[in-house]
Length: 295
Image (cartoon, rainbow, N blue to C red):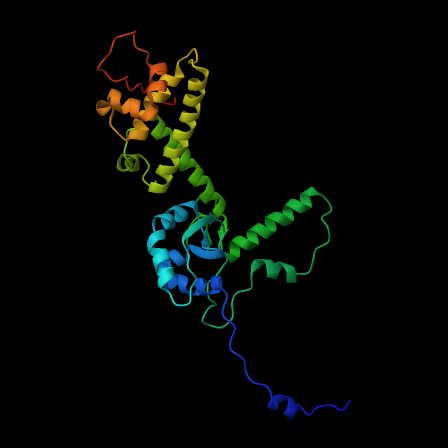
């Protein structure tokens, strides 16, 4: 079979239309213009499943922030050209990929992992003493190359901001969360502004998370007592119920009335916690017992 000249084959070829881009790619391209640079730096569209958009965020606080902004974001996605219809968004917290541009010089610094891979491998250490010495030497070398260190542990940082490494940031967040729970546990009527005076770096998201955690724990104990139809010998349920009513209703102790208690706990649990003599009705609210403050 004779070969066909290339010019004849090319003469019959016509360029086809460009394939439509993937919906998630179009969403990613329009995301910074819709949510703004600050939000786009801490979030990224991850997956489109039907009419649900999954968004990756850098922290749970950003997930909650975007959840509150979901309506205007969805409106912006619908108005963007050539984007599919999206009815709702779900969020996942995790590590976002590095999307920073290269330096203006045209070349980027070689990552530490690549530098280590290109270095000549060392023979195995003779003993644990030599292995520890090598590790200390590597740590010191990294410290010398790094211009910024963590303000808490002194670990070298690749970027000058934030001034704290990821492990220390996680530990600081856990410490602040425990402190928040202790404060809310001891004074459940405090508003966030009053909490902020005691914990200056507290956020609204952390306050709401501590509030939900305590309410869930207390309600499990109260539900168990209601199913059993009896209280424990120490009567801890009454103390937890008083704090639960205060935290759930967001009212001061002097504004708690029997109607509020009954509305929050329900008549069955109220009768179990504060039984009244048969035929006798009292107009006093159950005491807001705060003696369950942690010591």
